[in-house]
Length: 203
Image (cartoon, rainbow, N blue to C red; front, side, top):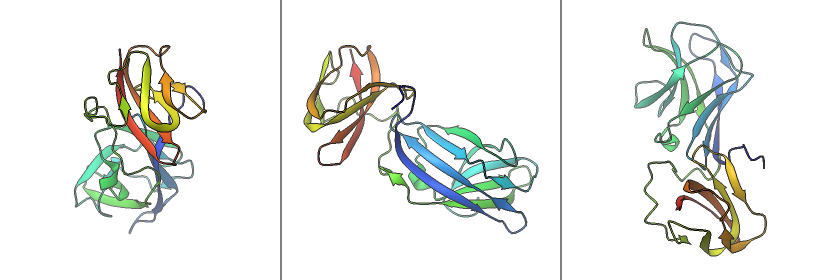
């Protein structure tokens, strides 16, 4: 894994379909990373009929009449584009990516999100209070060593998603003495195949 890369926790895909009045094609991916960041990536095959003040939205229905979240104005009527979504947004509560003309409150089209691949059931973000409630590892805060209650592989990330520690050999105990002090996210792949995600404070 590249040290600058993000570890994907969940990826959901949407395929756009034509609206009632406009031609729309292509796909998008909604990605949740283990550090809590959310990214909407519009793929290079995307194309839509141009219009004024078009925005991408997340919604529970195929129209913006239900509770929705406005992501951003589209950057282009065709081609790849990417948008960062605040970590506090729970992508599991939305089922569709909409294109909507906000200026005239006019619906353009949508794509339905699939169930997703990876661990899509965990909402992990910087506002999640796990510092004092972790039961999967000890101690927290840690000084130089972190101990888990079962064997597995550990990956540690900074809050901006940079990989700073990664192991291939399974263990219950890991030496993090070379990791600088600060708040970190971790992904622990247990021997039984399950994955634990959380965060810890390194003193």
